[in-house]
Length: 78
Image (cartoon, rainbow, N blue to C red; front, top):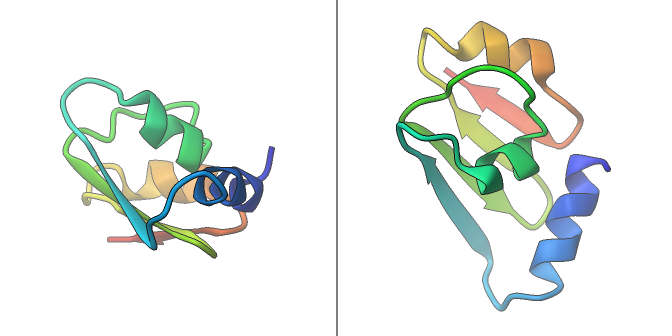
């Protein structure tokens, strides 16, 4: 499922404009769901989900892993 489809499904059921997900030391299933990432730790990484797209604020260590898995609708910021 495309990221924009995942975003649409969630925002159809909540009354919010933005979701913020902070992936801590353990892997957050919500973080993986919205990013579509299948590898990488992404410890202490912030994900901002808006109605049209999502942005990952990746650390220097995870930036290239995120870029290699980036899909349409997902912005990766270092």
